[in-house]
Image (cartoon, rainbow, N blue to C red):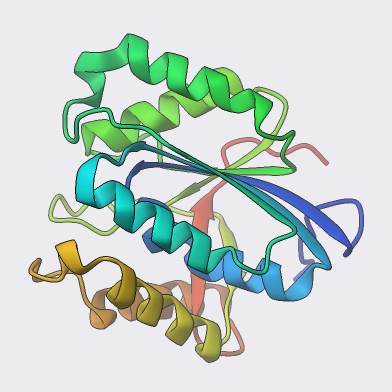
Length: 216
């Protein structure tokens, strides 16, 4: 299998991460980010969450700062648009996302799936595609009650050590979510195990994405 190696070389990588809510990026692609931070000499990250007000905003910032402590640069932008009502605030959401284009010129954009059944997730994905037309966009997946995990076509194998770092990070930084019966190590490790099986990961674990358009 021929691996895709983002960036012009192994020294520098620029990544923009977009999430609707405070824990979305971490659930969808924390393992991928941790691997890149280990492998690249210099990783520049733009990190934006649209709905991160109040206590959830505090969680979002503390989580991002901790996860990205080894990054060459980490520019964190948190919005306070209302959770579960982003489509009703389309103009503000669009202006927020448009303003992120000045953060950095990314090699890769990580965002929600266009076909996600959560209306907030779906809108963030739509706005991503509107504003980054010349970039590699990878859509991450979020397990949820609606059960709409879809087909994926891009895999990032992660070691068991990185997977453990991801689950510890989620448990440590998102106390507001611990009461939810799905927010636990078994959920996150189970999905990584399934994706690891699909790509024959040496560790048995991987994160997966949907790449709708790639240019070689």
